[in-house]
Length: 344
Image 1 (cartoon, rainbow, N blue to C red):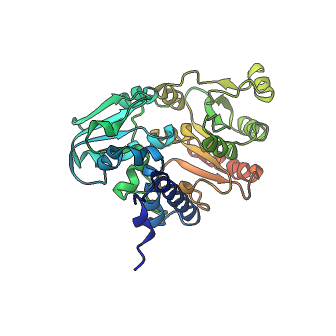
Image 2 (cartoon, rainbow, N blue to C red):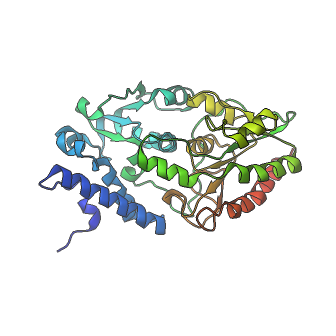
Image 3 (tube, rainbow, N blue to C red):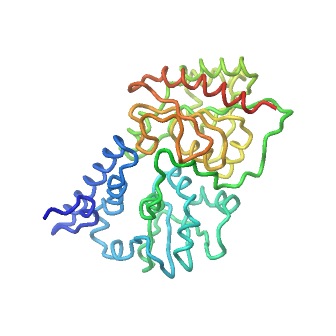
């Protein structure tokens, strides 16, 4: 009898390279299934193949023997394994993981360390440790798992129609009703050294000139100050012209995520493409209009205007690939609605 396809996850083949390639194919299949149906539970299980899609996993037996499967344990290491947005998003499930371990060690890259220390409320048996680029969690000889895979292992990925998750990062600053309202802009998903993330990021970028035309309308209609929440890209001529003319202000100068959180807390609204800054806004409860390409990343689904991942998100979608004018037309209505609701 043929086995269900998700049971092929973590299946060892005679050759380590073939084992890794099978897991790559399974993870890709999971993504394709979720693009069509974001509630596909087997698709979510297939994403777990991403824990084993590198040949190094099959060459080092400790990787496989220590991988955590959700069972109660004495000690557990959760480590910051992929994009910053994925890690920020999945910090929201730490409390549940803590209930399944007597000691939980959270390994984080330095850029996330201060944010999590100051803005997360964890049980006392959760410790936060700095993770170096050379870190090997499996070498500790105790159960371990990358943060990206946490909701899949827990079986807690929210379904469309579920109540949205409340913010899980503490806010230390709230808006001053007397100051001019501020709108943050993120038009690029950042630069990446690896080819696949770089291709994915470029698909998510909205042309600055198109976003800027709409941002000027929002500014004029609602009396806004416009801020860039980008770290880079300000030397592009179209962007530099607006900064030099003092129509756009650079708000961010640090790669530390606590500094980014402090910038976000100044905003009445963020309008952003799908990137880590947007995930941080959602985790803090900052209102955000998220501009999505077509097809969008599987986690957003392909049709809804809201998401169960974040209670303060509104999704503005391209009707077709690169048809950013359609997403921005939706954003016009969403920006007006959000700012009207925030009036004193």
